Image (cartoon, rainbow, N blue to C red; front, side):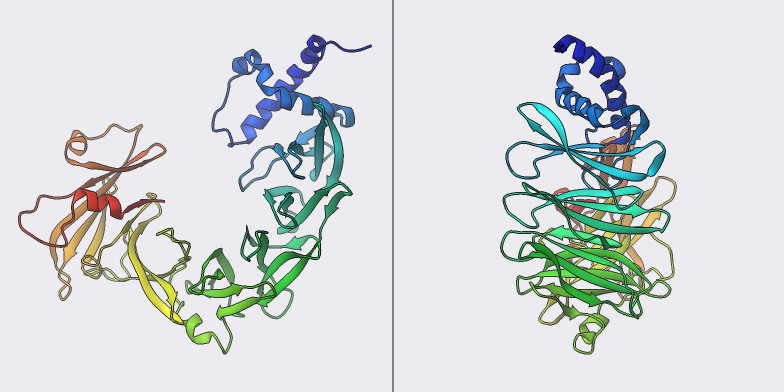
Length: 448
């Protein structure tokens, strides 16, 4: 007997409602949380989810499963829709586990034919938590590979698996351990590659690996050991090198607060050392040593990673605690490091300020504890004595009551979320290149 659409919706939607409430609580993708009444009033808007949920019921006892979701990355939902094979129709990827075995995550892939969803693959994951889900063109420009990062809490380890969705079936590549990963088109040709950094089984504690498809299979095209002095990996990033090739930047921590950056050129066959712990590249590698655990960044957004170096403020002892901190960022140029820009970085408040040449080595920054305001003072380069105040930066939440003085005297630098960033330039009569206009300050200001 054929079930009418009204009866089918009456059976599916109450169950769907409970599922959607769980998904909405577990995900931040939509940014909007609908209440129960809104969901009941607009079930037709979730027809795709309803169809997938009904298909799940054909193969699973949905009362005895718990839905899982990626903890990081772009996707944070238990249900993800994506066109894996490039046929113009999306597949549904569902993460779940049995209530009796909640640490054994499974992945179900469903596809739709003529509007009817059906399960095509169901396989076990490689961990008890989903770290991330990513879709990348690793093997073909016409379809996507599914890349899943797994966490295993019992072993405190992470691993990465690559899956290919083809007519022949779902192909799972080898599982690779990692601590950090990055995926991108690092080589000519349009395909993407994966770089992994993690603990090493050999004498050197850490290594980096380049994964790329060769002759239809994923291959370890490059493997390098990192410095034997490394005690921890701080960050992994990529950026253009002076010759146009893509470079890999690995920020490392040594004993105490000493850190450094090893740099490698990504080629089709290897990770070639540019600044690394080797005899040939040691001199450039040694130039990256710094006494703080700062990581490489691309604040000017030109596609080139810059290496941070702590920069002492005029008139401030290097041992004094202050915020923001001033850093000089260096770039590769002519086989050595050259200055790229200097900025005041206030990560706690969520902003940075590029310092003009007139301010470099001639300003000090002090933070007012009462109102959490940063004040920048011009100082005498020789004595360190304060000459005049150049700028104030204050951060307000839009939920807070703002001082009338701030609203009248300060000018808006930017807005991010609930926070407004205000600047104030003290009055000054005369001509001094160090005194900047409101527009110049806005161009120097950067929200993180």
